[in-house]
Image 1: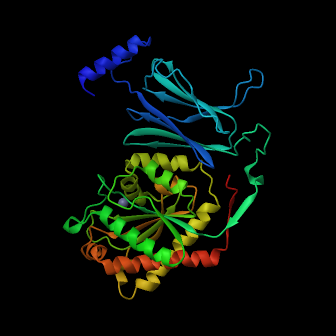
Image 2: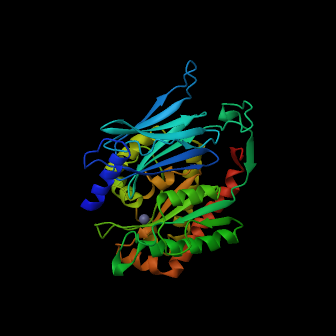
Length: 388
Ligand SMILES: [Zn+2]
């Protein structure tokens, strides 16, 4: 922000009746919300990063105040610029309020209708605090409905719709390797080949991007969740300072990921390794569900198919670390089973040649699709919460 612009900003705040903030304080630049089937997402966009945690306040029957979740935002100044509550009224959240509690700290308050659990994420570029509130929504008619999500009727359906997420794109090239090979191009070519293979096996396929365009992490997960996929497959290519590193790796989410994966997770998530550590501590709050079990199973089958179907012709395809777990936001944000495939190292001479080779990508796509098909045949129907 230029000196003139920040001066104008301070003058605006003064005019709005707040005390002038210290020059270095950050601002809330936007508050947005989305209501999904399983949860409501509130995104608070900030001009600088903050360290924050969610606090809970139970409903107070004496005063009639609803249950609340709140977050303090140290170093953030909103003054009285955001005094008007943002109504949501979606059966989970009543509204969101943002206000100044002290000269040093602003606060975000979520007035709840009801809730089971929440998750908190901090993202960079732009800096955001994301709060997802889960729970059975109150019946819009006002009639009491069960507070227990486990008692909801279940829906049985086959594994059918696959969401493919070609990593990076647009302004974000991803890893750049031998001969200027760009990860974003590899992931898109692989996604297109995989779409053909999956469609040939009767799957329905949705791509988060089908051209060279920038997509934020929130946009990727919003597309995936909006598509109501049964399986999420994120496609990437690896890079390493060690030019000897090679081979394919398949990840599922692990809340206790080994430290070796931190650097990779940081790069793929677009955050710093410190933020990955923080993510890991947040993940301990997140339930380990049937979803993770299914993701592990499909990842095992896909890896098995790749080694079995490609190992003879391309022996080093399994020269990497193989089946791994890591703390990837893209795996974590989605409630559907999710796997992440690092198709090879763009920094390895032989891997890079293969990742340019349509024959190699086509064969890889065939094996991935075969693994997913085996999962469909062997896993039986999906038991999911009733779609509302
Ligand atoms: Zn990547």
